[in-house]
Image (cartoon, rainbow, N blue to C red; front, side, top):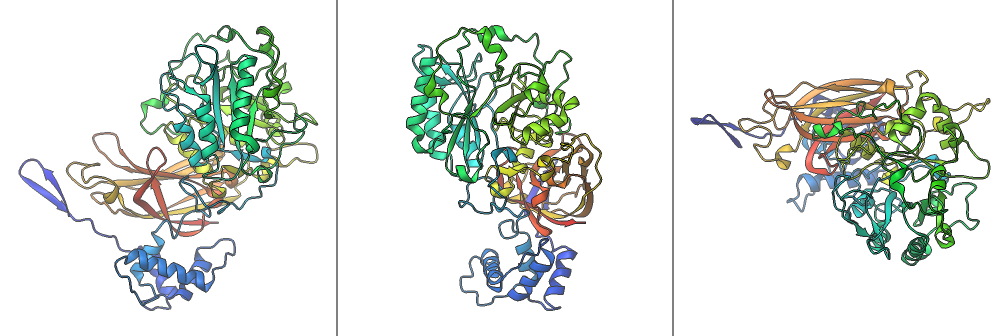
Length: 604
């Protein structure tokens, strides 16, 4: 029972009651229990196979019996000696509304807190690395904003535990020029020693996934310090380190062949740039609009600003570290062969224009980095060149330098062009980061998601996928939002409203191909901790393989901004049909203990 003060005279009392099962749940129970008041394990098995399986999945009677036991144990934890092995309607509803027993996606790895090695990884892991989207961090060592936050190994550890597979480190000499620090150069960020970062990567690299970790280095070091880095890396990782025998790879290896291995990716150490400050100066910085919204603006709006003077080159926060042209301006030193021998994936951008940079070379693979603005500009006229380049090579996209608050951009732009490493500020917030979390819930959360076939196929005339082409609808997704529960256990009674229970509503929609993007919402349900909506939405999809289902819950506030009450983003390709329990996360992407929705997914 909850009490809410109204003026000074009296209080309103509200009792948090458990909502009755929706009519669809009642009908399913009645049908599969053959009109009885109990459902046995075999009847539950038939229900799962016929209503909750979209790909001919079979369930054994022993598996169904185990589900019944788990449901009874969770629903009646104090009844240690339950003899019955049958479910009532309430037990059946409890089963459907439990996200551990009845998760929304085929991969059980929903939140990024570790998994059994190989658990639920179901995609082919024997293709070259260029065939996968790879969970990629940007400035992985920063604890907060890009200008003045501390540098630490802690955010690196957090990212690895979430399943991130690409860690970026900026290497700078310390003040006495005799050791190597990791920090965001030319800012007020406080440094962390490189060796602490390396040891943390070694310790936590494979906690969440057995598949390879790539360390991208942006180095600003003299050859003697590069040699010191080579020694540190070799001594720290030992046999974990993957170094190509021939120096340069002709084809990228597979994730399966690189299990439990560490790869280094950076440009070859041709020279040290003594005065990088002169290479680029920005006349102005654009204040990042995302910080105005505590949970971020819509991803469709979170795109780079257009600047007619922008060149395609990486000219933002990464200091153009891949550009070979700029190297001629630096003071030349003898290169460090020990450092060069560590590089598994060579970064670099050939001299010339964008078409030259995107050329596919016959016996050579490399990594190219572009800022989010550079990608947007390149995609205007060279979209198919980008797709063709990414079929064999690695393309890394990174946030523009004006994202001082560690906000992020819309990742779908990169993914639709085949970019494997869409680098994000993992310590940031907002809807764009939720999309990143959603994409990499796929394939068991292992950090590698196989790119859709349409990005990897080549036509008879060497044509590739055109991201701008108009496409027919391939599949339609129907989503029915039944009800929600659990907020009264995760939030204080007056968190949403001082005077009454919350008025929840749900937003649901799609991020993916531009033609597929849409957001819809239910009506608010007034004064109810366990809202029942029973509203259905239909989403036609032209590219379901890359679509992400977005779900958010908010509390309607007539006089102020609506309050946030949970979110989750899920890959449409892994949604399990039927009635499912959808757990909700906070703004950081961490799961609430109890808050969840009951939802039905159906593909037409």
